[in-house]
Image (tube, rainbow, N blue to C red; front, side, top):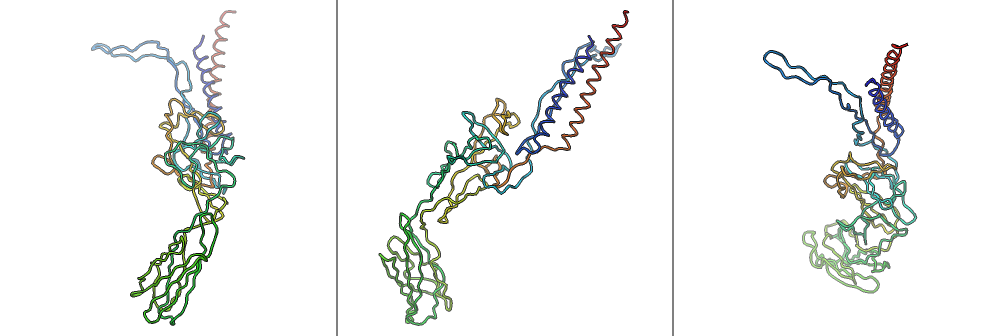
Length: 391
């Protein structure tokens, strides 16, 4: 039987695989974070007709004569170059800029994906589009423990930022040194106890024209305190701190120059309890929550995984991958650290399929398929001629 028949068949099979891969690439041109694949061909075993001969002083050597037995698919490689950025504006859409994969748990299997379109489920867990649980580190009391075991990112409905007692307040600005004797400057600030109850702390400055100092008195309705603030060249001296109940007032930022009356209580470290209003994603994968009391706290941090050989990851469907024996074990880490890309919120990675290249590959595969089909028809005609020798 003619060897060319089987060479043609192997060519048909190989180019059919190329058509399948190219068609899949085109079908996924709009799939989030899809990575295009390409087929690598190689020849099969060749039949040795005559071997090579050694050159001698009287005769030259000859080359081997071999007939190839067709083509086969050596492998299907994945193009891991990054796709373009598509801005969505959704705070649960995330894109990896650089190396790395999101980590997800589906049933008892750990999967990896670059498709960052996530949603919250009814239990407050962050999930992929097909329901796999996104993995990372959830904050406890506003703190994320470094190096902990990864698990589902859980942010329950009604997450609360706890109240914080006011222990320190800072006073800054200027008290006018050219004020009249007995002139008063009053300033108020709202402070909080350990359960978030608010009370007003009032601070009164009274000018002493004789020595240029200011008498201070403060009260929060329950506790009170007094002091005397002096200045040397406009710089505060004397009592630069005043404690009223649990609140320590820091007055080192107050100055005593002429004409300006800008003194005020510029900040205090207490807060009432607050409910979660929204969140955003930082470049290191930290979900930062914004609460109704004005506080911002880390809620969780996404885990990323890298591999020694990411090209060896197996596609698991749903834009996800699983580790294989040739990909190496996953290395978990934080976005933005060494070896890991950074994250961008409100954006997705687009497919890296190049349509112009894929349509060119489609033509090449089609012509290759036609050429190998012609080999079979030509071989068939030769066999027909052989059978017609005997009539």
